[in-house]
Length: 143
Image (cartoon, rainbow, N blue to C red; front, top):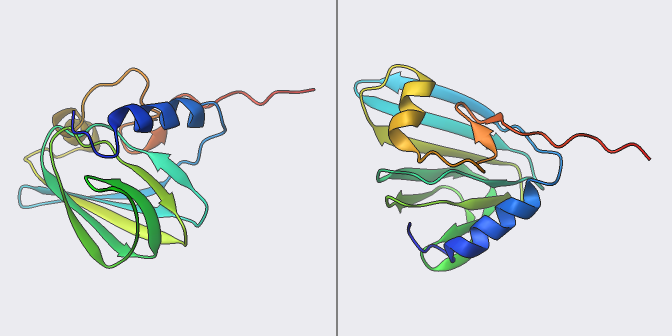
């Protein structure tokens, strides 16, 4: 795995975040000409930890400001800004303002499920299933 900010720190953050009610990102998926684009909207104040990616790809902050884990540590970046993500990348992204981010992948998949099988590592503790759907929502505790 890539040692962005320290994979151990991102995984520890994910473990703590998974104890809280989750935000299901508004996600749109586009397939065209051997490419897959994922468009993710995050309102201000949302923190998301993504999956480990198997392949290099583009990560574009289209608009807004995010705090994001990078090879150089956590950075606050305002879009537009383009990253080059390496295999093994797992990012934590905090929306400082409302933010729109997109990833671009070269692949031949025709469905979200096929794309995710090709692009991301299977992780039992990943918080999202294909399409950015919440996998394990904590139950509300009644007092």
